[in-house]
Amino acid sequence: MIAYVKGTLEEISENNAVVEVNGMGYNVKISAGTMNRLPRLHQEIKLYTYTAVREDAFWLYGFLTKDELEIFRLLITVNGVGPKGALGILSVMSVSDLRFAILAADGKMLSKAPGIGKKTAERVILDLRDKISMEEAVESGAQAVSATPGAKNNARNEAVEALVALGYGAGDALKAVNQVPDGDEDTETILKAALKHML
Image (cartoon, rainbow, N blue to C red; front, side, top):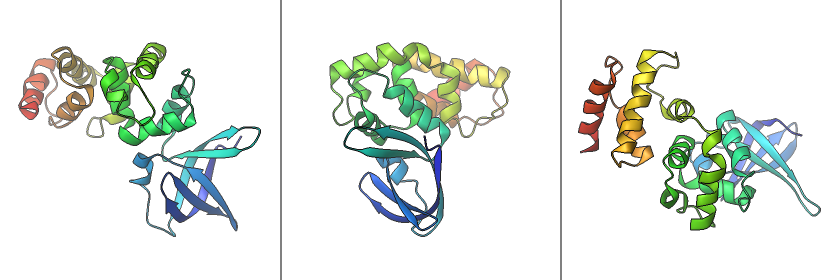
């Protein structure tokens, strides 16, 4: 219904932001992760939104990136994870960490979110594993990695997969690979350099 709201950030409270657009203030529900990245009050902001309409309520959920909105949309398709649960998950981990947790079947990491128990975490992994690719996971978190596809990104993807296979957490593996300078282009070199960051 409403694709995004763009206006002035007027108020921030726990899990909520008020954005003024043409004299009208919109309450937008946000995750703790989004709240930590908001600009200062009275600055311009653009939040991509998901509209939830119920018999007794009309809620807007806001995100700073389309990527966050898309992963939120995926999360709420899982039985037992409503908008509140999805926001809870995005409050305790980044989009890239969430993708890696799902790919690595790391239910323990997902269970850290408020209201997400072991069974719900397992359901998230089962339902979303086929809808998320390693490439998406690396791209969503790899700020230091070039967006141009090619051998370098493939090598980085393989290095992350290798670290996860060795038993490292998905989020930690991504962070370690991201700390490796851009000059290293083969998987073995990236893996060795990343392992140094893990120790």
